[in-house]
Image 1 (cartoon, rainbow, N blue to C red):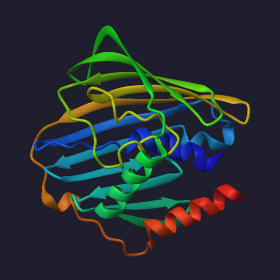
Image 2 (cartoon, helix red, strand yellow):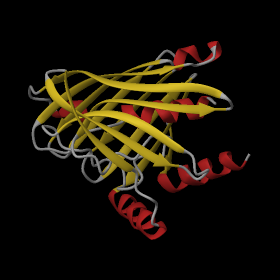
Image 3 (cartoon, rainbow, N blue to C red):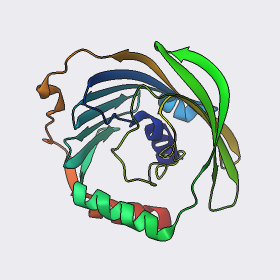
Length: 235
């Protein structure tokens, strides 16, 4: 349960920008319907930074924190949870390999219904869409999205695998998701994950923002991470 909730929240939280301008984007990610023992994961504060090819995402909640930094060649992820510090690196070559693997498996693309409704979020006029993803169990999961075409879509995760952490695949969406709402069921419990952009800044970002230290973290390669996740899913 704990890993699933972290994954679902971070799916929406770890969105970064792929543009040449400077962007600092603040978001809130909330998970409704959690049992009391997981209340610490119900609210996550997120800050995204983007400058050219560089991007950084900071996620914090009562029970965990995560930093994701992309320098155009590799993505470094650092996570601290309950005193445990772990991290891993995804290289550009590994990302390209993941894209080829996704293409070979020909994963069904989500159905996107564009709706003629508008609302303003953090100063940006947004349009509505409903994304329907069919899972391996043949069940449909619908996500309501409000998006803007004024900000480009993310390019941090491999194409076709942006939903690999438990959330929807939004890679085909015609814009950047400013607000998402996804209903999910786990072990008979109905939950809802809501992500909302609260502020967008376009002021210059210092290069030091994208420098992180891995001191104190147990680092692993992306290959080792995949092997660990495969082992844990089999338990």
